[in-house]
Image (cartoon, rainbow, N blue to C red; front, side, top):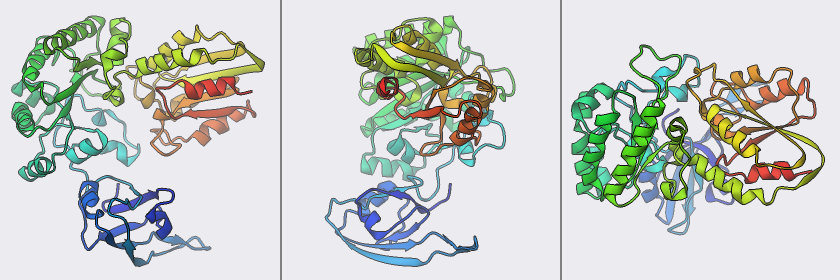
Length: 446
């Protein structure tokens, strides 16, 4: 990802759209200042008078060559609270603060070569944590970072805790500074910086007595700890060595019990196990009270409950009979396939056939079961010479804002393959994967 204020797009009806800013344009300065990130930019653009220096993106000529973009200066008068309406390629303009750890469970290090460059970026930047909810370890914090966080009261931040045992955290993150976690939490507490915590659970490493110790240590941070997600480590086939073990039913049940005890002591619900942990424990998914405001949904905590509740609301709106035969095929990962097979039994619609494709993850390995890591190549292996009518693919499989899978295969590639034997087949990309509404529309539409 390029440094600088690179325009990704503009909001409809905005000042930026009126100026004709386009994808690829680069904002050189705002009122003569080159802000480090969107946080700093948000203060600058509060002025009513803005001077915007822009380097236009190169323009392709008829012969296929590119003409360098020209520099332009825009003088803007606007209301104090009016936004420019620019979407940027990145929320930080001076480059992501890199991760300085070598975590034993890092999934970035468990990927093959040849994927998109962005998939190898190890983001440990507190600014994207504040702006986008990415997790930080705190091992690369400098005093200037602390001073800016505290001065602006940037809260909440998302923090990868993993363990509060200093020696164990040093080993897990392979960074001497990792042992400072309690000091980091103390400083957050002192400055009323709220946090959402994460523990990547590695069986026989930071579970059992170590997890109990971590939870006991976290009790003193009740004031700032808004939520705590415990998720199992993901192990791809590219993982070297055998230090990481898969989660067992016994592990999973022990985790859930420890979190329940922690919440009971806190007299409020803070700590939550991921959906995968509940499935591995073979326990029922908790009701929505367990998840509160679903603040850890992006970490796989509560997605199944949201979907089940949405299905329950939508179920009564299903047509009892379709006028024509319709076949709907879901392409997804193992966890979602188990859920869909469960609700499939409750869909009683005449002339409707539903099939669930549990796409096996050959690309990353069979221990990876989430839909978001399914690749286009694995889908292509699964759909050869099959009959399709309506195909449903969740958007979590695609790079945000594109039609591209992790391995570079595109939706158009899937469509071309399917249409060889199913020329009338239609692919539907489900944008809200936690909601049944889009699926209901596809089922009911004649």
